[in-house]
Length: 221
Image (cartoon, rainbow, N blue to C red; front, side):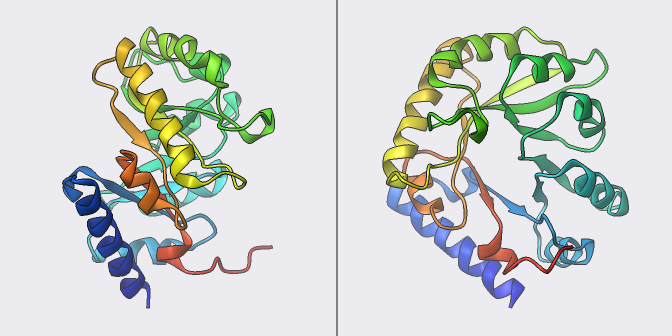
């Protein structure tokens, strides 16, 4: 069943890319494996998946350590405490959730380069994570001036009360603003299990897909 779900999503990504007049090879599907065991990651790895997403540091760190022999790219996609930033740097290749100046400062490094996205909050609720629209340029400039960070682009989650395509059109507009400051930062992390087609139609390059591939989460206590 797992591999069938994976192929269904891959086919959906190809169809949406064709609909958008885009090359499917330019789209990275990140399989979100939170609450799932390392054995599921191994099974997906055997099927060719290399990009995995986690949003809880403790679980992600343990899973990455257990699977360190595999050639995996770990994407940290959840809200990140500044005090955990150095530890996350130890295993994650990409962080999708830069949402405040103190976190950017905490991730600075003279030793290695970490890929990252600035997270844009598409709602008025500060608890949702992400910078407000008015702060996007300021945050972008801070990332660009911080040692050890390479800005890939913008990340966002579509609000539940907004039509996804409309929300992702706002993300595309934000991406264009970032590219004025950083012409190479044209990537867009957007789209999840229920709305990845709309995200692709609005230019998403990185999809964060969990249950559509992994199935329901196992019980976790």
